[in-house]
Image (cartoon, rainbow, N blue to C red; front, side, top):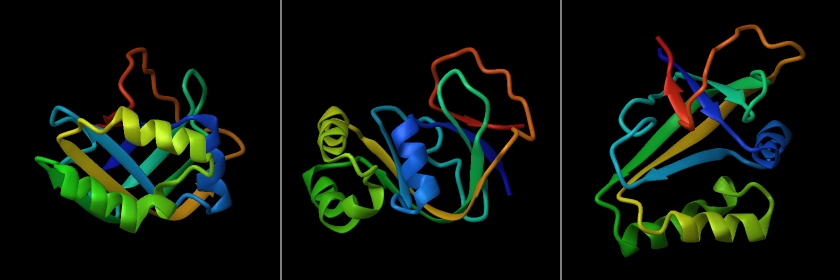
Length: 135
């Protein structure tokens, strides 16, 4: 089991904690984390930009895409949009448009969500990465 730090916008965090968002998706043009690094049973710490860690979830399932094409996007949109959604339709459309040229994709199914009152750990992070695999 590995531990990861994911950076999430506030509306995504709210959707995760409320149970509306059940799949976290990450897409990129390069092979970067979490692609190929996240697995079933891993712990993902939830952190908003510039703030403390506010919660965590366990990975239930992972679906990865490499060499993505239009068929992959059609599958993702038809099968996973409701699970990926943050609840903000406009933001979701913007998200898909922004990532339409992605070559790598990772769908992370969310389980055992826990919200923290006080962050149990401190992680110094000063770069712009949206995902880190922790040592």
